[in-house]
Length: 190
Image 1 (cartoon, rainbow, N blue to C red):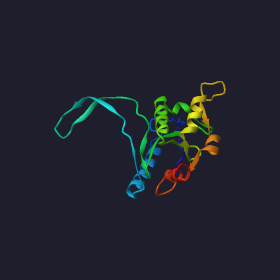
Image 2 (cartoon, one colour):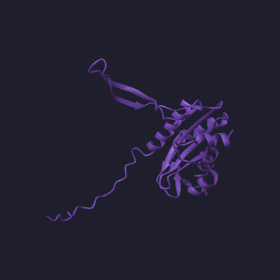
Image 3 (cartoon, rainbow, N blue to C red):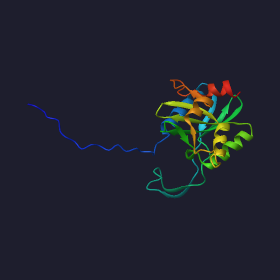
Image 4 (cartoon, rainbow, N blue to C red):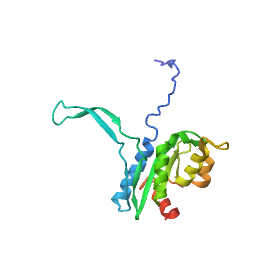
């Protein structure tokens, strides 16, 4: 018997942006668990504040939230303490080969990171360039420069990949911890 190939319609690949950043956040959370378990640091993902409006109680032990709204915009994804220093940062991913769009960062996050910096906390972004599978620690001061310049004549709406290569810190991907960003903090910020 001869099996002939069946002609199939070309499949259109769609991009789902719903979970963009979730893999990066999972890798950071795994790193944070490693840090916690080894007594290195205490850093946690901040929960998003919600206002519960309606709850269904089909049984006492099966309560289910059926309606809720975001209370206020969340600030950044992660915060904690490392060697007596407050750390606050957000995780961002981009599919771009050339830059990280500033629209990925929200004004309330900038305000929060500025407040942390003003109090001498360590503020930064961890940015994953998915096309290169590279992770960078971007100090908040560099983020602020591009954020403040975006509405000027010379301003741009993104931070170039070259800026990451020149001014940010490459975080190697490993096993334990997956993203050892605290090694960079210790070497470059403390």
